[in-house]
Length: 237
Image (tube, rainbow, N blue to C red; front, side, top):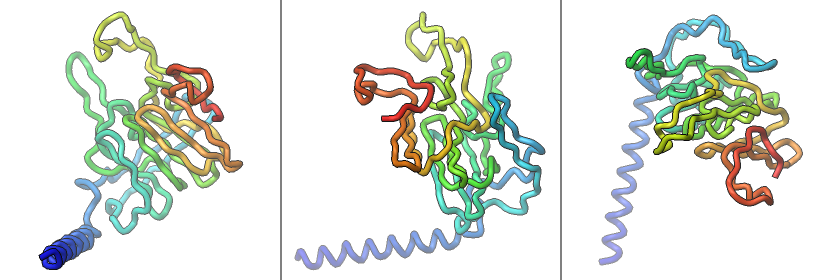
Protein backbone atom coordinates (compact mmCIF):
# COMPACT_ATOMS: atom_id res chain seq x y z
CA UNK A 1 0.00 0.00 0.00
CA UNK A 2 2.82 2.38 0.86
CA UNK A 3 4.49 1.61 -2.46
CA UNK A 4 1.31 2.43 -4.40
CA UNK A 5 0.93 5.69 -2.47
CA UNK A 6 4.53 6.66 -3.25
CA UNK A 7 4.05 5.90 -6.94
CA UNK A 8 0.94 8.10 -7.05
CA UNK A 9 2.83 10.97 -5.40
CA UNK A 10 5.72 10.64 -7.87
CA UNK A 11 3.30 10.70 -10.81
CA UNK A 12 1.61 13.83 -9.47
CA UNK A 13 4.97 15.56 -8.98
CA UNK A 14 6.04 14.61 -12.50
CA UNK A 15 2.82 16.03 -13.96
CA UNK A 16 3.31 19.28 -12.01
CA UNK A 17 6.88 19.63 -13.31
CA UNK A 18 5.76 19.06 -16.91
CA UNK A 19 3.03 21.68 -16.54
CA UNK A 20 5.48 24.18 -15.02
CA UNK A 21 8.04 23.68 -17.78
CA UNK A 22 5.35 24.02 -20.43
CA UNK A 23 4.10 27.24 -18.83
CA UNK A 24 7.59 28.78 -18.73
CA UNK A 25 8.24 27.80 -22.33
CA UNK A 26 5.00 29.34 -23.55
CA UNK A 27 5.74 32.59 -21.73
CA UNK A 28 9.27 33.13 -23.02
CA UNK A 29 8.01 35.36 -25.80
CA UNK A 30 5.58 37.26 -23.58
CA UNK A 31 6.26 40.38 -21.49
CA UNK A 32 6.97 40.01 -17.80
CA UNK A 33 4.05 42.33 -17.10
CA UNK A 34 1.39 43.89 -19.32
CA UNK A 35 3.85 45.46 -21.72
CA UNK A 36 6.58 48.08 -21.45
CA UNK A 37 6.95 51.83 -21.42
CA UNK A 38 8.42 52.17 -24.89
CA UNK A 39 10.12 55.53 -24.42
CA UNK A 40 12.58 56.10 -21.60
CA UNK A 41 13.19 59.47 -20.00
CA UNK A 42 15.69 61.51 -22.00
CA UNK A 43 17.67 61.97 -18.82
CA UNK A 44 17.20 60.41 -15.41
CA UNK A 45 19.43 62.10 -12.92
CA UNK A 46 19.39 62.55 -9.17
CA UNK A 47 20.35 65.79 -7.46
CA UNK A 48 20.81 64.57 -3.89
CA UNK A 49 24.59 64.65 -3.93
CA UNK A 50 27.71 64.67 -6.04
CA UNK A 51 27.06 61.27 -7.57
CA UNK A 52 24.39 60.86 -10.22
CA UNK A 53 23.26 58.48 -12.94
CA UNK A 54 21.60 59.08 -16.24
CA UNK A 55 19.74 56.88 -18.69
CA UNK A 56 19.88 57.81 -22.37
CA UNK A 57 16.46 57.87 -24.04
CA UNK A 58 15.79 54.85 -26.22
CA UNK A 59 12.98 53.04 -27.97
CA UNK A 60 12.34 49.52 -26.73
CA UNK A 61 10.82 47.16 -29.28
CA UNK A 62 9.68 44.54 -26.75
CA UNK A 63 9.58 43.85 -23.05
CA UNK A 64 12.32 41.74 -21.45
CA UNK A 65 11.60 38.06 -21.98
CA UNK A 66 11.87 35.43 -19.28
CA UNK A 67 14.87 33.96 -21.08
CA UNK A 68 16.66 37.33 -20.88
CA UNK A 69 16.44 37.63 -17.07
CA UNK A 70 19.21 36.49 -14.77
CA UNK A 71 18.17 37.92 -11.38
CA UNK A 72 14.92 39.05 -9.76
CA UNK A 73 14.08 40.70 -6.43
CA UNK A 74 10.62 41.25 -4.94
CA UNK A 75 9.64 44.07 -2.61
CA UNK A 76 6.21 44.90 -1.25
CA UNK A 77 4.07 44.98 -4.43
CA UNK A 78 6.98 45.87 -6.72
CA UNK A 79 9.57 43.91 -8.68
CA UNK A 80 13.16 44.38 -9.87
CA UNK A 81 14.80 42.37 -12.64
CA UNK A 82 18.32 42.31 -14.09
CA UNK A 83 18.53 41.17 -17.69
CA UNK A 84 21.52 39.45 -19.28
CA UNK A 85 22.85 42.75 -20.67
CA UNK A 86 23.05 44.25 -17.17
CA UNK A 87 19.95 46.43 -17.48
CA UNK A 88 17.80 46.90 -14.38
CA UNK A 89 14.03 46.96 -14.89
CA UNK A 90 11.30 47.78 -12.36
CA UNK A 91 7.52 47.81 -12.10
CA UNK A 92 4.74 47.78 -9.52
CA UNK A 93 3.81 50.06 -6.63
CA UNK A 94 5.74 53.32 -6.36
CA UNK A 95 4.52 55.15 -3.24
CA UNK A 96 8.06 55.90 -2.03
CA UNK A 97 9.94 56.13 -5.32
CA UNK A 98 11.09 52.52 -4.95
CA UNK A 99 11.01 51.96 -8.70
CA UNK A 100 13.76 54.53 -9.19
CA UNK A 101 12.42 56.28 -12.30
CA UNK A 102 12.24 59.73 -10.70
CA UNK A 103 8.52 59.57 -9.95
CA UNK A 104 6.33 58.48 -7.05
CA UNK A 105 2.67 58.17 -6.21
CA UNK A 106 1.35 61.18 -4.28
CA UNK A 107 -1.83 62.96 -3.27
CA UNK A 108 -2.94 66.28 -4.75
CA UNK A 109 -5.99 67.95 -3.16
CA UNK A 110 -7.40 64.62 -2.12
CA UNK A 111 -6.72 62.96 -5.48
CA UNK A 112 -4.20 60.17 -5.80
CA UNK A 113 -1.67 60.66 -8.60
CA UNK A 114 -0.63 57.06 -9.19
CA UNK A 115 2.88 56.72 -10.62
CA UNK A 116 3.06 52.98 -10.15
CA UNK A 117 3.98 51.02 -13.26
CA UNK A 118 2.13 48.01 -14.69
CA UNK A 119 4.91 47.29 -17.17
CA UNK A 120 8.71 47.14 -16.81
CA UNK A 121 10.70 50.36 -17.16
CA UNK A 122 14.47 50.60 -17.47
CA UNK A 123 16.13 52.20 -14.45
CA UNK A 124 19.88 51.87 -15.03
CA UNK A 125 22.51 49.74 -16.74
CA UNK A 126 25.68 47.85 -15.83
CA UNK A 127 23.99 46.19 -12.82
CA UNK A 128 25.22 42.87 -11.45
CA UNK A 129 23.09 42.43 -8.33
CA UNK A 130 19.90 43.82 -6.83
CA UNK A 131 17.97 43.59 -3.57
CA UNK A 132 14.55 44.83 -2.47
CA UNK A 133 13.33 45.81 0.97
CA UNK A 134 9.70 46.49 1.78
CA UNK A 135 9.69 49.88 0.05
CA UNK A 136 13.31 50.51 -0.96
CA UNK A 137 15.73 49.14 -3.53
CA UNK A 138 19.46 48.47 -3.79
CA UNK A 139 21.70 47.72 -6.75
CA UNK A 140 25.37 46.87 -7.22
CA UNK A 141 27.04 47.92 -10.44
CA UNK A 142 29.93 46.11 -12.12
CA UNK A 143 32.44 48.59 -10.66
CA UNK A 144 31.40 47.58 -7.10
CA UNK A 145 29.43 50.75 -6.38
CA UNK A 146 26.25 50.36 -4.33
CA UNK A 147 23.16 52.44 -5.15
CA UNK A 148 19.94 52.90 -3.16
CA UNK A 149 16.52 54.51 -3.62
CA UNK A 150 12.99 54.47 -2.22
CA UNK A 151 11.68 54.79 1.33
CA UNK A 152 14.02 56.19 3.99
CA UNK A 153 11.98 56.25 7.21
CA UNK A 154 14.66 54.29 9.06
CA UNK A 155 17.75 55.60 7.29
CA UNK A 156 17.79 52.46 5.13
CA UNK A 157 19.12 54.30 2.10
CA UNK A 158 22.41 54.86 3.89
CA UNK A 159 23.07 58.39 2.62
CA UNK A 160 23.19 59.99 6.07
CA UNK A 161 19.58 61.22 6.01
CA UNK A 162 16.29 59.94 7.42
CA UNK A 163 12.64 60.86 6.94
CA UNK A 164 11.31 62.58 10.07
CA UNK A 165 7.75 62.56 11.41
CA UNK A 166 5.54 64.48 13.83
CA UNK A 167 5.21 61.75 16.45
CA UNK A 168 2.71 63.56 18.67
CA UNK A 169 -0.29 61.67 17.29
CA UNK A 170 -1.26 58.05 17.79
CA UNK A 171 -1.29 55.54 16.12
CA UNK A 172 2.00 55.91 14.19
CA UNK A 173 0.36 55.64 10.76
CA UNK A 174 -1.29 59.00 11.48
CA UNK A 175 2.06 60.73 11.83
CA UNK A 176 2.61 63.63 9.44
CA UNK A 177 5.92 63.81 7.58
CA UNK A 178 8.11 66.73 8.65
CA UNK A 179 10.97 66.11 6.24
CA UNK A 180 10.78 63.46 3.51
CA UNK A 181 14.23 62.11 2.68
CA UNK A 182 13.13 59.20 0.53
CA UNK A 183 14.67 59.16 -2.96
CA UNK A 184 12.96 58.43 -6.27
CA UNK A 185 16.22 58.04 -8.23
CA UNK A 186 19.29 55.93 -7.37
CA UNK A 187 21.99 57.54 -5.21
CA UNK A 188 25.47 56.17 -4.65
CA UNK A 189 26.10 54.87 -1.13
CA UNK A 190 29.52 53.19 -1.08
CA UNK A 191 32.16 51.44 -3.20
CA UNK A 192 33.83 48.05 -3.12
CA UNK A 193 30.63 46.04 -2.54
CA UNK A 194 30.33 42.44 -3.72
CA UNK A 195 27.03 41.42 -2.12
CA UNK A 196 23.97 43.09 -0.60
CA UNK A 197 20.81 41.94 1.17
CA UNK A 198 17.77 43.95 2.17
CA UNK A 199 15.41 43.48 5.09
CA UNK A 200 12.13 45.31 5.69
CA UNK A 201 13.92 48.60 6.47
CA UNK A 202 17.58 47.67 6.97
CA UNK A 203 20.41 46.32 4.81
CA UNK A 204 23.58 44.26 4.98
CA UNK A 205 26.51 44.49 2.57
CA UNK A 206 29.76 42.59 2.12
CA UNK A 207 32.77 44.43 0.72
CA UNK A 208 35.67 43.07 -1.28
CA UNK A 209 37.83 42.75 1.86
CA UNK A 210 35.20 40.49 3.46
CA UNK A 211 33.96 43.11 5.93
CA UNK A 212 30.24 43.18 6.79
CA UNK A 213 28.32 46.46 6.95
CA UNK A 214 24.79 47.31 8.14
CA UNK A 215 22.46 50.30 8.18
CA UNK A 216 18.82 51.23 8.68
CA UNK A 217 16.65 50.03 11.58
CA UNK A 218 19.00 47.82 13.57
CA UNK A 219 18.95 46.23 16.97
CA UNK A 220 22.03 47.87 18.32
CA UNK A 221 22.91 45.04 20.68
CA UNK A 222 24.30 43.54 17.49
CA UNK A 223 26.59 46.55 17.54
CA UNK A 224 27.49 46.12 21.23
CA UNK A 225 25.21 48.91 22.47
CA UNK A 226 21.74 47.52 23.20
CA UNK A 227 18.24 48.59 22.17
CA UNK A 228 17.06 49.70 18.72
CA UNK A 229 18.68 52.51 16.76
CA UNK A 230 18.57 54.00 13.29
CA UNK A 231 21.83 53.94 11.37
CA UNK A 232 21.64 56.37 8.48
CA UNK A 233 25.05 55.37 7.12
CA UNK A 234 26.71 51.96 6.75
CA UNK A 235 28.56 50.83 9.89
CA UNK A 236 31.00 47.94 10.01
CA UNK A 237 29.95 45.02 12.18
